[in-house]
Amino acid sequence: MVTCSTVLDRTPNKCSILQVVVLTDVDAPVCTNLQAALQSSLFGSAELRCGPIGPPTDRLDSSSSITFAPGWLDGSDVVFDRLRDDLPWRAMERPMYDRIVPVPRLICTVDIGSLGGTHPLRTITHALEKGLHARFSSVGVNYYRTGQDSVAWHRDSIYKTQRPSTVALVSLGSPRTLAVRAHAQYCSKTAETTGITPVTRRRWRLGHGDLLVMQGRCQRDWEHCVPKERAVGPRISLAFRS
Ligand SMILES: O=C(O)CCC(=O)C(=O)O
Image 1 (cartoon, rainbow, N blue to C red):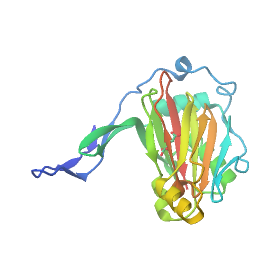
Image 2: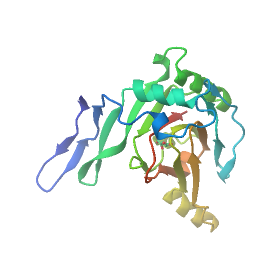
Image 3: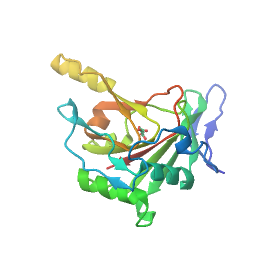
């Protein structure tokens, strides 16, 4: 079912977008069972358990840091299967130049308060809130059906709040690369004021049950993406934003 349609201004010589989003409910999961597509990790089939969250593991600069915790979530197989099967996945379209193009992944936003007390997303949210001293009322969930699904370079829109932010990504399913690079404005401003261009690009391989947290000015001064890849299985990412 299409829940919101795009409206184009079709005045001659003009094609501007008045309203941008097309959301289409996707009835059936699009991929095969995780077990068939993924070699199960050592702890993937264990009972759900979240690990501790330590201090940042990587500094991007003096105000932005990354905490990478491989294998943070035990029991990831069950979480993957449940989210894939139960969430109301939606296909989305967006304008790009003068065309409307599909967003290359399925998406869903979950209101944590609407979930039952034993839902795995609640358990994960509580562990993240405790470990990061942050509040997360909703979670954006991405479903990458194949390696051709991806997310382009972007900053999460919370950067507009001007405050330091916390974005926690929990990765389930096939490993994918998360790349981070300095935002163009930040690069030129830093180079102008200090004469030094910041270290521009970092990458992390996010596997089944891994956690990666971006903190400080990561969303303002840096941008991130999940590039397309060949021959990878399905992946779900949970994006918690403070
Ligand atoms: O899938 C990921 O790990 C990243 C997701 C992301 O960048 C986003 O949802 O904005």
